[in-house]
Amino acid sequence: MSDHPYVPEIAVDREGNEYEVQGWQGDFFGGKFGFWLFMLTEIMMFGAMFMVLTYYFTLHHDDFINASASLNRTLGGFNTVVLLISALTMGLGLLKMRHGDVKGAKLMIWATILLAIVFLGVKAVEWTAEYNHGVFLGLPALQGGLPESKPFGEIMFFGMYFTMTGLHGVHIIIGIGLMLWLLKRINAEKVTPEHYILHFNLALYWDLVHLIWVFVFPYYYMIGAGLSTGGH
Image (cartoon, rainbow, N blue to C red):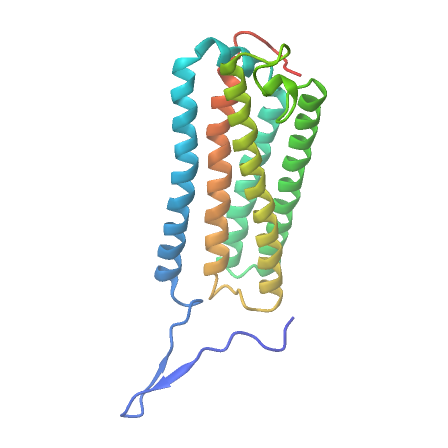
């Protein structure tokens, strides 16, 4: 543990009365409001991508269904369960922190990190299989204008698929880094049961990460479910 725990700043008015200065760790409302503004930008970004996906789906319905049928729904479904469990462990960690169980909170954060790494590992296996089948950004199948190129609708589908799942993966990696930083702040007693706004905001961020995937999975993996039972 750190020898320098959080010490509130004290201000004194003209009458000599002392008041605790409300810094960022104590400004719970301000901390939540500021982070919700950040979350709004994330929702706008991914929401725009889903709108583009929906628009092109109406134009290239059959191509999108054929492309979706080639994805591995088993791996995609497994990763969905992994992220849902990780959202549970992150939420339990926050509850434990708020109730003074710092050790239990840290354990739940480590469990969330482990589940996030599992998610990335499964996604790496899935992308590797797709690359080996010739379906990946930069390969002839998705370039267009070549004899071996897929139809335009499938190219759009896979372009959006790799873009959105890749961007989501970046958010997972960022989340792992933030959780490691959170553990460091807890060990330094900068995050405590009395000052847990950082933990709260990170749990909120992780909720967004898993919620985005809850939409990604049916949008990409399930629309072609009637044509195939396996995928790559």
